[in-house]
Image 1 (cartoon, rainbow, N blue to C red):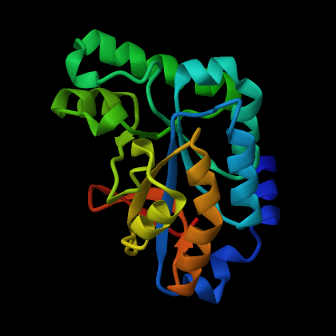
Image 2 (cartoon, one colour):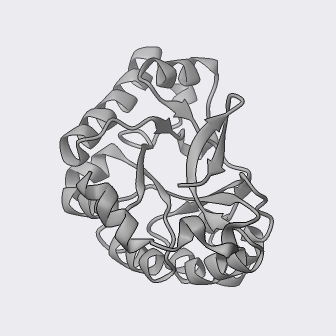
Length: 213
C-alpha cells in the first residue's frame, strides 16, 4: 500500500489527464539496475511524470539492491530479464528454469514482489522458454517497437523510432545507455501531444499490451 501511495503522489495527473485520451503505451527498459545510469534514468522518468516497466537482470539486482528498491519505490513496475542475460534458446530446460527462478527469488528478496512479466534476452525464445516462464507465473513480453538503442543509434533516432508507437504498443529500450536517458523527456512529450501516456503492461486476449496504470 505504501508504494502505491507514493506512486499516486508522484504521478497524480497522468491517469486522468486529457493527454491520455488516445490510450497508453509501455515504456520498457532492460538490463538494469546499473550503478552508472539507473539513477539518471529514474530522474528523467520522474521529471517527465512517466512510469515504466524495468526488466531487470538478477545478477545486477544482487549487485545493486538499493537501486532496485529505488526503482520500485519510484512507482515503476519490476519484471524478470533472467539472471545472466543469456540466449535462452541455447540452454537446457533446467538451465532456463534456473535463470528465471533465481531472478524471481532475488526480486522477491529485494522488492518483496514476485514478477508476473518476463522478457527473454535478445527476444530469443521458443515454446519451451515461454512454458517455463508460465510455470513460474510469468507472461512473456516482447515489443512492438525496437528503439535500437542497443545498436548505438543517436538520441534523435531513438525519439524517431518511438513515433511508431500505437495505443497498446510496447517499446524496447535499455538502462545503461545515455542517449536513451536523453530521449526519455522528448518521447514522453511527443506521446502526450498524440494523446498517449505511459501505462503498465497487462494481458489482453492472450497478448501483452499497454493499459491504464
